[in-house]
Image 1 (spheres, rainbow, N blue to C red):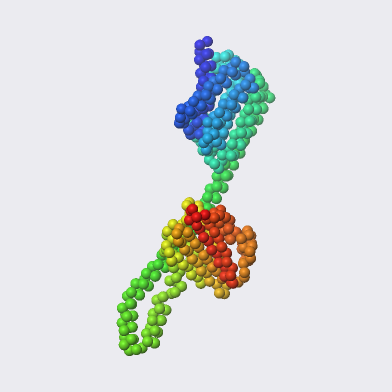
Image 2: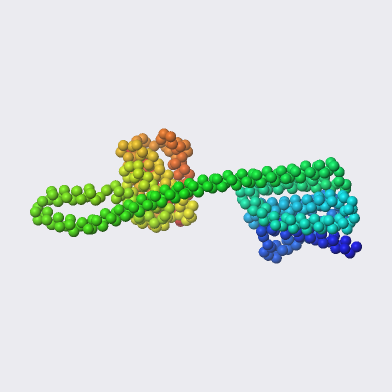
Length: 448
């Protein structure tokens, strides 16, 4: 009799402990405070009371509410954290394992060799420990899916479905005391249904992972292309600086000879010959457009801003559009706090450059002028381009464009970004004559 009591008490105390241990392993957590230990002890105590109650009054009407209450408390221990969905999934897994163990114990108890109380208790304890030892190493693999934000929702739906199906099987299985063909078929159908759901989910995860990997690969390829283009533009910028340095070095080398020529021409009073020599030297050694390609870019000390300017000036230069860029004062610190805000500013500047380039393409008297200016922490950007028609007031509407084969989303996107920083970013549009001028002012924090 003592052995029976020990087996019974051991099973009742061990079952809720295993539930809690599996739940924490699925969350990869350990209780970090006395309060957490106290809550888990309370949950364990409820599990023990559940076991005693069911032992006294065997009925799934009592066992199921206790089971659901215990799982709910486990989830509530994580309600203040960021793992609520993961906690719900973990609780459902623990609930499914517990119900399956009860179903198997009840089915085995229907056999003749398990009709004695001692055999039934040994079977119950043996299945509890066997299920625990089999499930324990698999739980980290399951945790990978229920913790991944890409799969969390799908996992939650699948586990909810499996839990409800397991409850149905539990209700059916606990009502019979003798195995029959009909019961075996019903439980077999439920088992096959559960296996099919798991396999379908696994296949869905596999396909989703493949699609995500493909999308990530395309994104990386696009990033690599962008990095390559940026690298080429930076190389062009560096080459331009090197050419300017070479020209300056040659100019210094020739400077003494020029002075000698000036003295000789002055002595001979041959000013016309002097002017011709100077013009010839200038034509051979100075390319006005090439020298001005990245003029004043060295005054921009923000990498993001410098990168977009180099990119757009390279594009303008390559298309042969006359332009002038001015940034006479150093741009050290933009009046924006986060990198996201800086990215938004760079996007607006990039859109305005693209709009000016598109408007200038094919225009006979095309010219683009852009300017950066900073004073007292405020940042100002102005870009002006020639246009062959007066821009419509609808230029900021999504989809509107005066250009053929163009989506017309640029300026509307720019305005949408600016509206996020109402009071700090201010846009002004001027359409005087055949000029289109886009002005952007970014105010320092505290001046909104």
